Image (cartoon, rainbow, N blue to C red; front, top):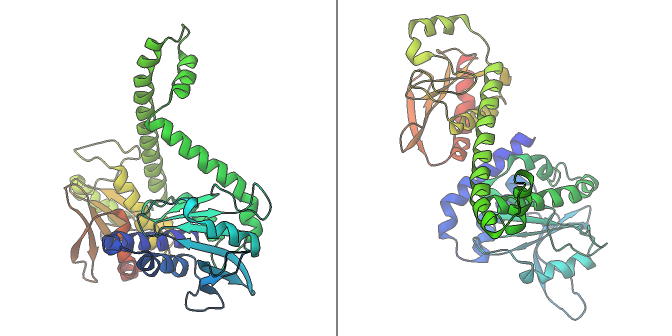
Length: 369
């Protein structure tokens, strides 16, 4: 299900990228992006007023006739409130006073503030029945963190689990805030951060001159640390993919016949014979495997990197190509095959666009199986 959630979000991300420039109003944002998020990603029937109530009204004190954009109900009780802003607009609770008021007078325990791309989820961790000022979960469609799929799954119509959401909300909230704080320090470390790290490696007096020197060193070390982490991820992904590959006698004979084009990818991802597997190729392979494993076990999806393209195969068999990633030039292409193994290259602007060809990829797997 988490893979399915990821696929849904990435499909919506492609739609967002294509249409965002034409959206100028809040109403258009709701129609183009928010309603598809509620229906495609979370699985709610946006056309059933007993499930998703648009322009929800609940009079609050002297505030009469104010509306929240959507209320999602279950068993006749309001569970989730959604307030929308125009796509691209910065999100601020100053412009979401209705959410605070409605949160206090309805049974809702979840409130959502969104601009159609970023979705901020709130609950009442700090004080009962009072919406927190900081979200416990932040989901950005255009830059989706797949690690959040399992948490997003709990909010879907099929798997809505309020107790599970609330039990993990506090940890999610603070982990998310810590990640954002760390990201800010990596980009532009403040004086306290520089002083703390300097004190761990420098035994002398930390003067202004030393702080100025170490500010640059902290930035440099942070960048190198991130690069090392990316390389570790690349090597681990390649090792995992290699372990999933199934040795096929027929394909091994083809490798021997054409060692340059069909040499298997090395597990450590290092360049050999002019071939260097990139992180982007590995991520593309993982997307293709996630799509194809709905039809066959993931252990049957293998990869081989060549000088001109990155190939994805069924059973590690060169005669069973599923797709090719042509990422070595400026324009990226996804190569797909018909029943006669004729390849057609489709230009793609991002890895997420691979999901647009999911049906074709699944069909291709069945050509050989």
